Length: 178
Image 1 (cartoon, rainbow, N blue to C red):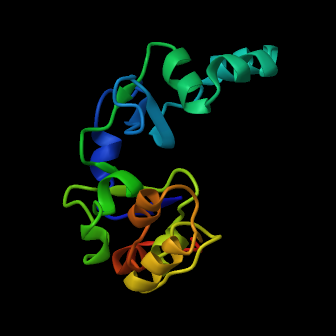
Image 2 (image 1 turned 135 degrees about the vertical axis):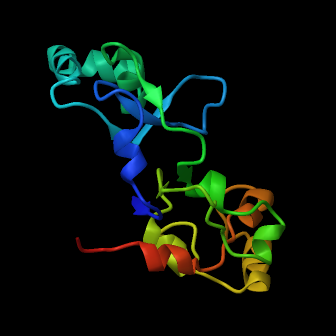
């Protein structure tokens, strides 16, 4: 669920070698929360988290709910975040707002070195112009008509926001095989 879109050298030079560096999670703007689709850490630094989790897996899962909350809050010495713009979240930073999404494909932010795809919308979905693997790409008016017929997940506004054009730059940057 990661597409490399730029040179990564700066990501290995940024911060102190002992830092744990995460992407800031845009879903929770009022919580200092990292996103664990892409993070850097020195070998062994997160071993205490493994031990803590193994001591009480169910309790840890119930307390933190998401692994990124556990990693963000329990990392020894705390976490830092990549500079703004280096890591883009496809749903938040690339898909254009409704109604512009009906007229223009998702954009690649100019400073993005990596684009991440947390959740159900994956690179192959972006390439094909669909919201997830359960949907198909439709022409804009067909998408609207499907929503009016009730063929949608949620409200009509949500349905309209979930239209996207096939995204050529994802196809050009994504590699299925290493």
